Image (cartoon, rainbow, N blue to C red):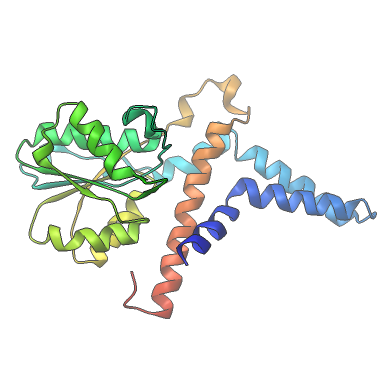
Length: 254
């Protein structure tokens, strides 16, 4: 079920959906179907548009509120800091930090920063992986190499998605002040899943973007990075839709 969910979710992202749809429409257009040609042209136009900083800023910025960033002045004490997993690139020839993707590194840096602010807090690094390498193990090794005492770090290596992370970690978090570190686009869904397990987490969002500051001469130039960020947003939309569907079918799920 997990693999099927990931495959379907991946195929519903902007690039595969619009690309495949355009390809099919173009094949139909060769049979003199003008409507197919129009639809494929619109699909490609949308794909290019959402790959520009100008359009992406209108999609992303309203969904990255500064209020989700951690405010140290409002939190006199934190007992546990959870860093949720993200992308990994297993390669035994590289150091642990070089096997973590940018998203995972950004989250881990925020978690380590909070660990410095709150020296008594436990740092929990989470996330499964593949090829016998887990996100949590790479974060664990990287955190130690950056000066965090290994006695303060706990791993959660068995969770393959956010729902599983919340479910597996919840028993350890009851009656503690918990800071939750994840990407800002992912934070509302992650916070909701932890809340559903009875854990009231304090958001510590990271991985913000600001496309509006990009020079005007680049605002209308499509880029792979911009499309990647919009894809992350779409991933969250689909994730929320999936949770809503599961709860509609079974109110006790996730």
